[in-house]
Image (cartoon, rainbow, N blue to C red; front, side, top):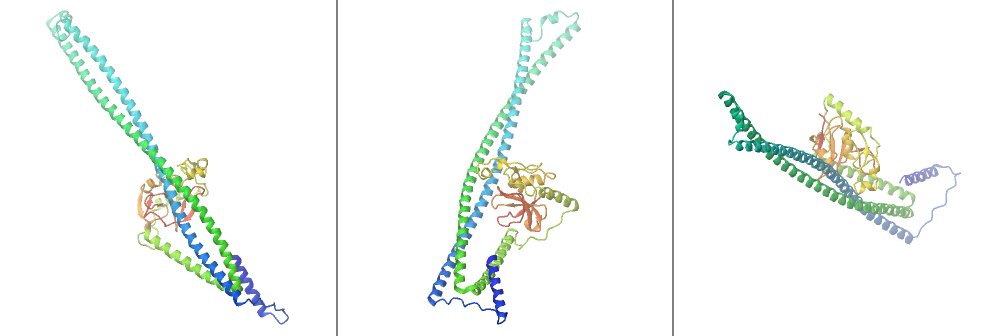
Length: 438
């Protein structure tokens, strides 16, 4: 349109110059005078092209809408895979801990059993000696060897105490064996449950990867079709421009350009009105976010530290699964879109990884945006302020960004992108912001 505007302005300038020139300036020859049939045919051709442009515009809008929906679906599936990965790692840790506890319980139970067997052998030998001397308690030789009645009584009491101690020790170790056996059984049960949950988490990750791969494939096809429609629309618009120029000449072209400009302005005003309505619906009825509340001076300093950490990573590449409290890391394989972009060979952040790094000095966050949504105090969007985390759903969280104030945010957007500052998107935004500071 810039070229057309320049051409029209140039023609108007030439007309003005001719209108003010003296008699010595040569008047250009008159333009061709087309016949009525030629004018009618050219107008019909222009009308047909205009209709074709309208149809293509409608089809392009529909394709772009489907493309946006598919992008949201891809983001959701990728965050579901992140959740499955976190749950799987947690389940693996639980299984390993349960296995260690079960092994320790088995060792303790084996040690208690060996001690009981030793005590039982000693008791058996003691009782056998007692019966061989005709007594149920102690050896007869112990009594015969006494030198006085007092000595005899002391030896009898000693043997009685030894026998009771042996029996008490036996009972105590038997109780210990039962307790250790119970612990062993409980540990084995915990190990079975942990292994089952780990298997379920791995299956959930497989299912999420498959669904995400399907969404990626659909999105790729839709993106290709959208590009084709855009190219076709541009071509037909050029044909329409030529037909209109043939019908009305440069003055008519200028008038139609002004009409187009006014229509474009109305279209932009309508888009702004709809965006404001959407923002009002998502923020509980307010047409725009309320004035941001101010944190305390100490909280404000902490917020600025968090934002400074996030801003220090501007331009760092996106890598799915990448990022920790110390900075960007290699991404991981996902079997889908991240692999197609080679994220596992890149060092960078995904959306939740960037939040982990930004808030590392404040709070440890899990590497899943769904868990980050509930990691702090939730406030309505109308009260969001600088340093809050924003999330997108709507049914399940699939993206997170850090709010900078004045309608701006910093985010790690998607595979193939980079950490960037962008205007807050209100489509599919979650109704609450999450506040970790103040």
